[in-house]
Image 1 (cartoon, rainbow, N blue to C red):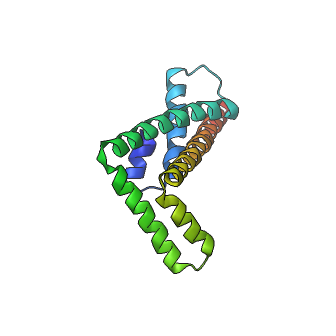
Image 2 (cartoon, rainbow, N blue to C red):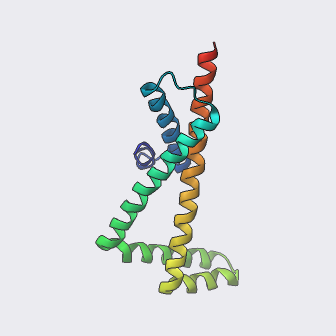
Length: 142
C-alpha cells in the first residue's frame, strides 16, 4: 500500500517499491526484535512484500478494466502508439501498432506489461528489504 500511495503522490514507481520493501523489514523487526535479520532474509521479506503489492495492483487493475474503463485504456494505448509511429519512420513500430489494435495483440501486450510489473515489484521490494536489513544489522553491531 505504501508503494501505491507514493506512486499516486508522483514518486517514481521503483522508489515506492523500494520503500515498501524497506518498511516491511522495519515493521517485521519491530515485531520480532530478537530475530537476526541478514540482508538475504531482508530481501526475502521484501520479495513477499513485492508479491503482495503486485497482487493488490493486479486486482485494482482488473477491477478498473472490468468496471468500464477497459476501452478507454485500450484507446489511450493505441493513441500513444499512433503518436510514436508518427514521430518515427520505423516500419516495425507500425506493425506493433497494427498488432495492438487486435484483441489478441492487446491481450499479449497487457500480459507482457503485467509480467514486467511483477518483476519490478519483486526486484525493487527485495532491494528495499535487503537495504533495511543491512542497516539494522550495522546498527545492532555498534
